[in-house]
Amino acid sequence: ESTVPAAGIRHIQAEDVSNFKEHGLVCKLISTGIMKDGKLSAFVHPTLVDKGEPEANVPANYNLITLVGSASGRMSFYGQGAGRYPTAYNVVQDCTDLLQGKGFYSPYGGKVQADNSVERRFYVRGDKDAWLEENKQESWGNAVVTKPVSVSAMHDWLKKHPGTFLAALPNE
Image 1 (cartoon, rainbow, N blue to C red):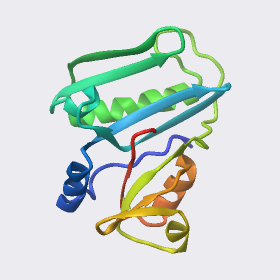
Image 2: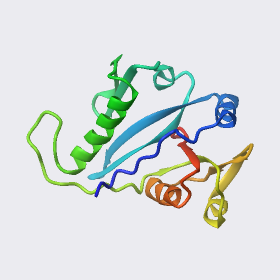
Image 3: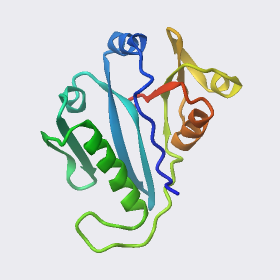
């Protein structure tokens, strides 16, 4: 079983987009992989980015891949993509391959378990319960913005509330 949690944008509504615009943000479906302290985090979910960032301005059939290295800094690669569904499938497959120890253009390595304890704040609109209220930092209209919670905890919560829309806020 894959340890890469994934959430899509099928439950986004006009009020969400309005809330994002009000805060100078744009919502994009982003696949994230982070290697820190020897631990790999990998997840896919809607993510809010500042409207001036390159990620916010990627049009329909284009893709942007950004790598942030300790020695190289931020490098981004932009170009025509294969379309929404082929691209989404391949992003999830790449994350799954990495966790199974398969490299992109190199020999396979060992299998890796994702550690998604990395914390993010999340915009959540839809179902609410005691856990979400405990982790609420503020409200944006009918939505809740959480205090920092782990990606794994948020995705576990989302599984129990399938009609809910969530998006990660930009890192601060």
